[in-house]
Image (cartoon, rainbow, N blue to C red; front, side, top):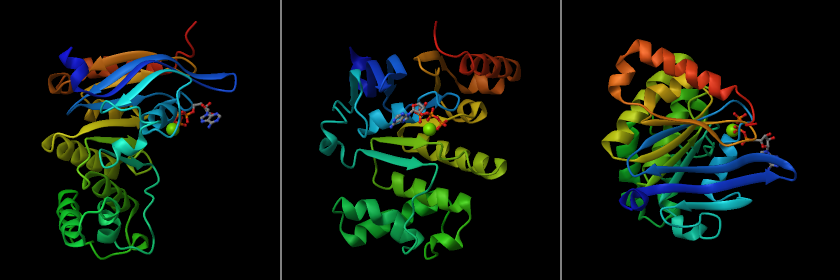
Length: 253
Ligand SMILES: Nc1ncnc2c1ncn2[C@@H]1O[C@H](COP(=O)(O)OP(=O)(O)OP(=O)(O)O)[C@@H](O)[C@H]1O
Ligand SMILES: [Mg+2]
């Protein structure tokens, strides 16, 4: 099936338990090339656990996870350079400047220094950080550091970008601006993105589709969103309410 072919991420009947605690049950979902999908859920719903299985840092208890056709846990090497991640904490190296932090992933992948520098500078411009190239992390605001982290993730030209609460710790205005900029850049360069958030507004604003996880269970709701819907306040309010209900509905009976 062509839709399967296009899936950059696919989970089939995935279960995950820690000891006898069931975190994910029978999760099937996919993210297609160029899609921006939000993974929503209240705290402890299993969002980061799902992300970790996609990144290949956790092995599912049952079912199958594929990223760009590979098993991320057992074929981690095959995904080098195809997958980039950015987290809530920006994980910048304090002794490297903005541009040095941004080019790091490229240097690790063996890109020549001159090209790495050029690509890093280009991406810093795209996330509106030109002028801050030579500053150290401690000289930047939280929002600026988050932008460096995004530029670093994007400049390796990954097939897939995974964000776990990358915008949540920022104040409302900064977070909104960064989300808008990120979504614009991601769409312009046709990046596939799965991002985790517990804030419904973030998901409604940025994504083509939202997937809601229920604690100890699986997917409570899956809903596509388009710009027409985003422009319709009534529908948006209804959807917000539906998502809130599903997020809070507890484990499946
Ligand atoms: N390595 C682990 N060992 C044992 N339990 C774990 C482990 N990782 C996560 N859990 C448990 O699994 C559940 C889901 O955790 P997870 O981090 O996936 O939630 P989350 O949806 O990302 O929450 P948050 O919004 O707070 O980040 C929690 O109850 C957590 O305590
Ligand atoms: Mg989490």
